[in-house]
Image (cartoon, rainbow, N blue to C red; front, side, top):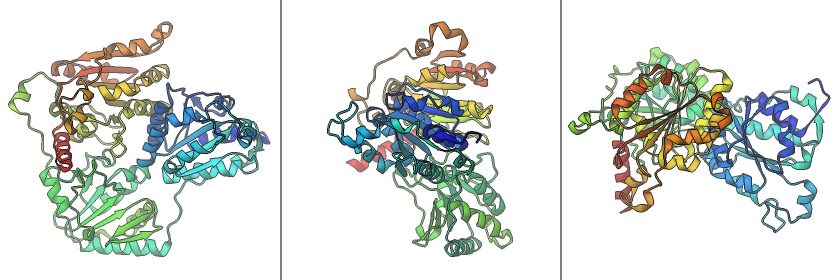
Length: 570
């Protein structure tokens, strides 16, 4: 650094820049305004979201693609508005830095009756709310310790791939610290495993693998969140293990690989996929999340005695837990030590992907149904696409879509907050723009979910992002109808003229500067024409498709899952 000192805001924003955060999401508020003056001088792009919840969703998706995301809110009213998004990032293992501008230190110490407080002099109450949904927290009250505290929480965020919380008092922003501290990089590798425990775990895993006749590999979201996809692919290639994914792990494995065996969803799986993995005598799972949706109502039938579960910082096998064994280092050791000549696997017959057969009625109709749509999307997607599916019919429907190699999926299978998709699309599209990639950002969003976070379409337009949005218009909360209340009034929503919304959000005096196109599609022929249109398929600018689907139509897997939930609640 050329200067001898920097202020706290400059230190924080420079550290974010060093860790790959080039864009800062958030909403201005009086307690963070001075800090925001230093965002762009530190080389960051200020996004400026329409609300804090959307900013949180955007930072989440951005972090999944860029290694870390960040947002700035103001004390109380601002930070509380995004806690839903932060909780989702915690549940889904996403690295997000939540920076909160707080009142001056003297005001806090004296318990002043300030706006944005509860009026009781308690300035810790909101920080306490964030503690259970962040992996690390700090309150920057002392210039002497602030740099170390910033480094500590940023390291925790990146390494653990979970959100952190930083309070920055308004009068701490311009406090000076030693700039030379920025010359020492933050260590972003996971801690080293306990060597003896790691060696024992590796030896036991290899012993099981060499003895197995029908071993299999099951990849889940943890493999992506903890950045070991490349290692898992090398391990799979070296061993020749048939590789399965879960719904939450969609996009983690190369679905065009000869080793790809299908998607395992418990009893919601294709019969041949289900049989192959449930009859396996060794299933090695990587980053597995056994949630209800991910496992089709906890319907996994994999014996604990025939499974090995690799998690971020521990391994579970033979009903024992091996602590302080980190996934990355263990995989590196397994890749190095495994001897393919010692494998005694039976000849593997890969499951044949079952093509969904349309009924006579569905085959002849012009309606765009889920059973027709999702297999059709397979051939439209391109290698490298980022595909966001909203909580609802689309994040289940996409299970029937075969991904080309290198497609990244973004969804909230565990947290399942409706409205996530549009904010995530903004964050993902911005990540693609910032990284200079040629990848398309494609979002499938339900009409009910869209109405929760519609404002972020404005940010996509204002930031001039490349994003293709398929707005599924089926007249309400379709996923909720299948869970309960098929014809209940509470699952209905107001009918908007969705194809007009992008025009409303485009500034009249700047319309020619933005690449915005909208479409209204209600038949298969119209959608086929759109999907084969070269300009549309390039995905440059905002392409907003109002896609009409029949009310009460849903993916069959979702219907089966919803009905199983209904039976359990009876």
